[in-house]
Image 1 (spheres, rainbow, N blue to C red):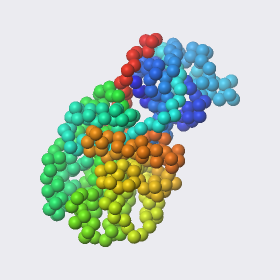
Image 2 (cartoon, helix red, strand yellow):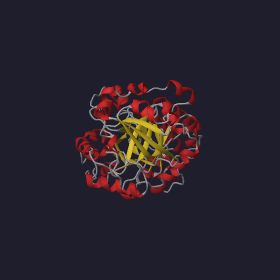
Image 3 (cartoon, helix red, strand yellow):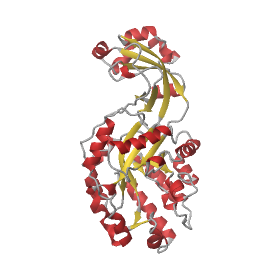
Image 4 (cartoon, one colour):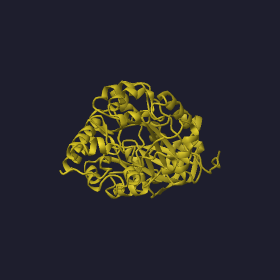
Length: 423
């Protein structure tokens, strides 16, 4: 079974450097589910994409922290040598009152830190299947079989009736109009999607599952998008650029209407300006596939370094996450597994957070080249990716949208583990 725990910077650093091997918690209903052998996922509160993993090796239930502090070694709780003399069980009253301790008891969780990476696939779609639990479970099962710890599901906005007006400008080209008439377009409502999300989150799942939207962004549609999105709440919102002045760049017919009709340099300039507008909009937590414009192997004649640098700085200023998306590699045959090395290095230098993403459109594609993309991210520097981005960022999104409909529910996992021996 998996348990997600948030830690402030000081205890997180203590776990990271091996100074803390016992975590202290209230022995409430949630913590009574912890067993020896369970997986602990520690999230840094200030940077929730920063993750450490641990395995439970022993459990110490006590009636109070006073009793726990008398019995267990303080240095294993994260106290340093010069703090031992002044350490006190009263320190825990900042988090848990005496009444809470009396009602529930307390728990010391001894663990060993795991060195393996936390594997996330941060981008996949239900687009070609029904919006129901059974289809979601196919994606989850595929993720489990491939050893993933977490998946993020985000359907395109062109699935939902609420966004129909946003796509009207695309209809001026007949091929795009035909594409928008497919049965997978505008076939559901956001209320139906949210109902499915609630159903899935009420389940015990073998991995963590987050839900969001991939929002097709244009400068012209920005205010319409803001209005629609303000009425709904998701774990995250991902902004994506798929068209340039009303012409899709990533479809088979795009070569005729865009790539063979316009100058490549102009296409790249307009694409990356749209990316920058997307970031500046303040609507999004993440940026989808930042350099997927490369998918058909058209390249500009000018150096993109300055453009990459500006995007990196703007992402960092907005505290946004950028994907290293493998879809262009296995779906379109591009040689890069995720972001190009140049773009990846620049984002690292600018302090941008990254997550690997497969852009899977079918269950069998979940996790495609995720270990490779994650390895490339980690190899560029520890500060770039500590495992996975998991923050909901609802508070920030509500502030900018003036939305008050947020709620969150932590999802724990189900594994071959029984109740604690002391229960």
